[in-house]
Length: 249
Image 1 (spheres, rainbow, N blue to C red):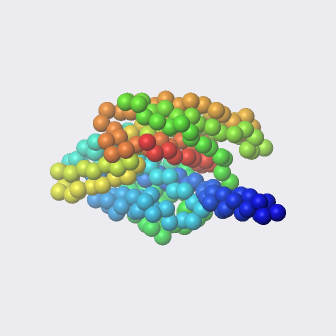
Image 2: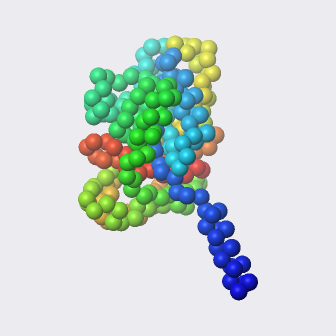
Image 3: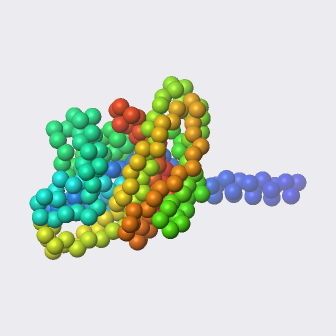
């Protein structure tokens, strides 16, 4: 009997030691080193990433630097027209008059001024209530200029039979820039999770799931202070993000 009780206590302790699964919420900040309103938003995103203030929630953050500020005196080395286009698509879907910085998009269907902490909290609280599709990254590693990982989406998670887009992003863990010109001239700017690569991997049917090896090239100069691999599932038309996962490298 004593041995049975001891075994039961060991099992119970193991169960209690296993942390509960957290609900992922994807935060995409559209920002620019050429915009004087953006540094507060960059700091807020970094704070959310570092402190993870919402119990039971995993905040997965991405900084996407737009290129339309580059003509105003400072060329943001992290900027890309791809991110400007992605932001424009969000603005059209969300019926925003036009792109602006800093803009924070939460799970692809809620948007706000990226420096507003209270509005960010409200959007996160709303997004976490939405059903999520389980998504997992395993065996993530970097070998020179390549990152490899395995991505798994279990089958049968949704009876609706939806088809979702699967995206992969490779982001610098941290970056810093000394801005010489433009609205932020003379400032030292720090960034978190700066996206260096963003690509669509294909489609996933929720009734079938997917088990897929991922191979991503690391851009020149990326990852000096660490890398993150982020994968997420997004509805192809509405743009809502219904699942996400992150692995640090």
